[in-house]
Image 1: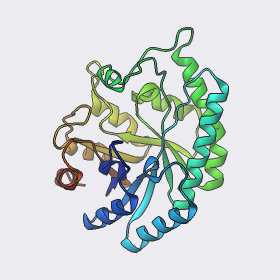
Image 2: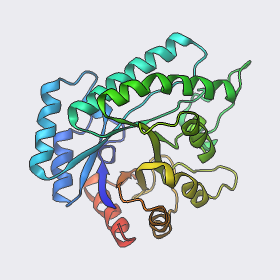
Image 3: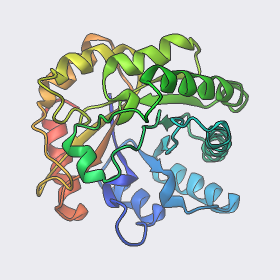
Image 4: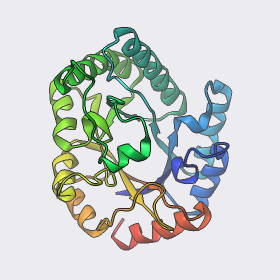
Amino acid sequence: MRLAVSSYSFWHFRGEPYPMEQVLDAAARLDLAGVEVLERQLGAEPERSRLLRLRRQALTLGLDLYGLSTHQDFVSPDAEVRAEQVRRTVRSLELAADLGIACIRLNSGRWKTITSFDDLMAAGGIEPPLPGYSNDDAFGWCIGCIEQLLPHAERLGVILALENHWGLTSRADGVRRILLALPSPYLAGVLDTGNYLRQGGVDMYAEMRALAPTAVLVHAKAYQGGGEWYDLDIDYGRVVAILREVGYRGYVSLEFEGRAPAATGVPEALAVLRAAGL
């Protein structure tokens, strides 16, 4: 397995985005294998010339750019809203291709019937459907949108990597339902170790074990200084054992989500992951 870092670890959506150029320099100093790029840190419409400069910088630093973390939401009864989300995601695939990145992190989306993110976290990331609709409707919309994206993914050579996130994919069975509906080498899973909060006694290690065979990327959450939104006590020795059971040898991407400054929190989190065998 290859230990690496998400640029999100240096910026938690507060203030100006932390420059990607500085993220790459930091990753090289920390002797990491690569960087996962948070799309929002590139700005709304990054110029292709900048993307190519970042690609060159990573090459000269000996870093891989292995993932682009994107945001989309296919859970809407409005077909035009869903079509716009598909168009935005095609643009993300094109950005990934320009950066030489092999996969994008994909979200399913959620109902947004809980408007406050803090309240959503308190509910374990699970919310009720809109009146008159069901989760089956939402899965159908999501599967239909991803089906439209697959030809673009194949054309560009970039994998759509669906994460266990909030909403439809809060649990492993939701992720697997979508993956099984669209068998394709250009659709796979992302295993996030930290998205299991307050879910009514859910065994998060059993959930990870269910997702591990689908994963082309793993996110390792850490909370030095206390979590921005919540804390989880994650046994990374167990996580490493689960990944080894399925023969996973890909990137393990640190997503530092603590309140400690990134300058200290990121190295401390990496030390924990290395001690666990990564």
